[in-house]
Length: 360
Image 1 (tube, rainbow, N blue to C red):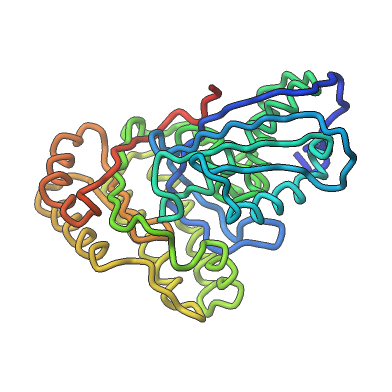
Image 2 (cartoon, rainbow, N blue to C red):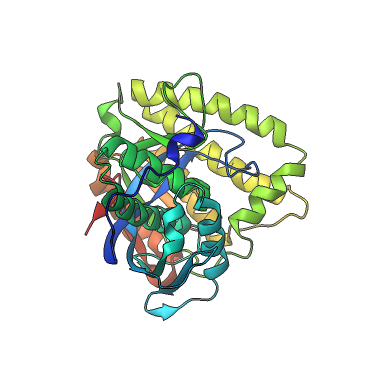
């Protein structure tokens, strides 16, 4: 599909007021996307697990406006409070999608949103938040146009989500997702994500992810700033080549089910991501001492038990502990008895690969 395919079709139904609600999950990248182009497309492709319990619930009410405007009129509340901090990001999002959703300027929009997890602490809240908002917009567009095309609905939702937050496009589908054009994957695109379903080993069907809340505060440096720093990074070209190679390696692993190689690749990707942050100019460090302690303990546990448990990190201090469902009893005990003491108030979130967003 090209960009013109995402421009909305003719409005058929006049709607004075309508309200929608979607729950959309976060996702955790296995091969990381770090560095983007000016049009919010990635410098390299990425593959992610869509989660289940770490999600954003967003309610959006559209009311026909009496006044004409060149921009979208909206209000936003986050967890019951009006949120000025989010407003510039949402303003930019609406401005950038008007070409594809021009009907939005005819409505006053009220957005209410909340997360099931700490905001901006290394769990991809922008991914779940922007995907939930985009799905509400697509539900409205579907009613305005009587489109009724489910495949197009989700593809455009992924496309719109990507404009708001790159990783958000990977939250539109459940399971395992790829974002970024790659010759190995049919129909892959820089503009939206696709779900990987063919020949995936049963080893990954019920994979679990326990998120250790090591730091619940907002990140000192936003992901957007981190992506921009890749433009002048000394190792950017090497990193982008490495990411393409790791996409190919992970594609093979997902098919052959080699959990040992999965652990090694996923951990290497996580450490590479944070190495890029530490070696950028200016440099910054998002890991905490507790993060390093947990990493060491996970690797020691895997070596001593031969259980294929591994870690990954998003752009923050919190640790995602990944493991097969069949090993959940042993790993859960390890987390409760050993790793939880490094968490804020011993708090962690049990999650797993999910089925994707759900309309309320």
